[in-house]
Length: 291
Image (cartoon, rainbow, N blue to C red; front, side):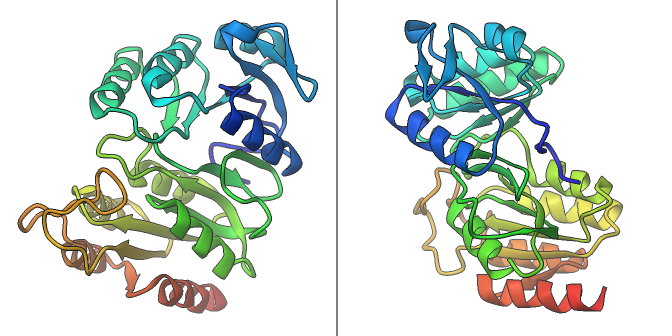
């Protein structure tokens, strides 16, 4: 099995006709993703490599039965694109775009809440979701890992790729890049619970980073609710205080949001935390070999 995305998922791409949208649509198709349409109101009626372009998410869903949208819309227009997806009640919207103003993300996040959270938002500023050998919604390289028994949730795209590659011998049910912005949709906790409920996921790997308190909250949740083994890694031990590192949300303010504090919280919850990505992979491998 997998979480959020399977071989049966029908995917549309908002912004399919843009350079990034077209490039990554082709990569997703090559990975076996069932791309059934794209959305660009100015180019409705055209196609990209035979994939039809529709005027709206609602029309695309009505014509194709789509249940996933991948958003490759420029930052200035992403808020409107996500709200359109929410209004159409698409079950999953994967927002790849980076550089979205935080108040725009907050607005579409709050709007989704007000509409009953019928759409699961992953991102923004994320690499997407991949269920290896089934479907790939986003920009994650599909050829670096295999299907298997690990569930991965990560704030970092590149660390997602590294962990997928290092543990390719065991493989993954699903890998979710949740993004590193201060406000995101799907959280570590959401993914960890989904992996807990997935019978094919035997071990969970979570990758966090400095800034905010998401990892501390995840630690509390794991301690109270999760029975499967969890292995963690926190990026940013050498980051200077007060300096944003890579992601908009990766900033240490005083004693808040440090890598050490997150590591301590996770270990107190029974999560084994590696000092490096490679050590984290070794810990995961050691646990899996004993299961």
